[in-house]
Amino acid sequence: MSVEIDEKLKQSIVKYIKKDCKPEDIIVVEQVIEEVLNSEEYKAMEFFWQKDGFEQVLKNREYSRGFVSRIMFEYHQPIVQFEILIEHCIFLIKEFKYPYKTLPNTCKVLNGIAARAILITNEILCLIKNGFASGALARWRTLYEYSVISIFLVKFGEEYAKKYLAYKDIANYKEVKVYAQHSKTLQFNDISKSELEELKKKSDDAMLNYPDLNERDYSWAKPKVKNPTFKAIVEKTDIEYYEPFYKFACNYNHGGVNGLFFDLGQIHGLSEKDSIIIAQSNFGFTDPAQLTMRALLDIISALLSLNIDTEQLFQLVFLKNKIPEIAESFHEVEKDIEEREKCFRQQIK
Image (tube, rainbow, N blue to C red; front, side, top):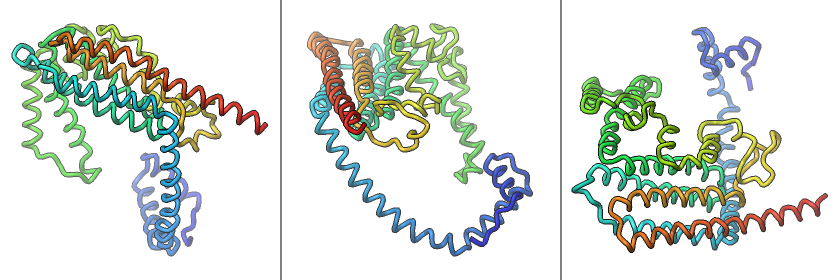
């Protein structure tokens, strides 16, 4: 390449990447970028992008298809049972007689959460089927949050469901304000002044109608929770025993350091050496599957508690008793895989 990389250019690039560059650094880097774009080497990259890249993509797809087929074969029993449990939950939601007259806001929220829970559960199942155990656990984190909110609203009544819904206008305005601050940099459409004012009015009205509400994410939980945080809300629901899993799942959501060197899909964990080559795995699905089923049933239980009948109660008890059985089925497959891995490692020593 004809572009010379001297010390001055290196420093300018570093500052440009770190976003602490001065105007003169930006000019230097932009000049170099222009030279790169016009070079023959850059133009040749388009050819190799298509040829080499497409060939590798085809190889990866072929490998992935085979890998997923092997997962579906080995985990056939627990996955099918998991899918059956989801279908029963869908049936319970569809057949449920919502007490809209007496609990309109609670019904609206819990119906929405139940629908979202089914979707998230299927996303988690999809991740399991494709060999992404840590991703499945990360997605469970959202499902758990919804289960906590469901239990809290059922436990403390219609007024809190009403405030939960009212908080939507506050959340909308908060998000749009952030969007407006960065839309020009991102080259997105601007929010008009009238749109922003309208959203602000709705937000102000919500806080006027419900003095407990403010811009804090969980302010709708006041006054039952004096200092509303998710942890404080969890403590009011009596399912805080999931906290160790929740904390661990946060590593995969928030860039925690433990997410770098431990992966659920790796039998022997991760080292700094092999952490960059991790891919799909056939291991580590027991915890995400079991936690997902429990959170889903907690949400369904909260919903049905609004107007449960005898038949629904029997079905709910039956489904909850199925969870340990399905989890054990996942665990049995993983024990077999782990044993085979030990034998293989002994053979190659």
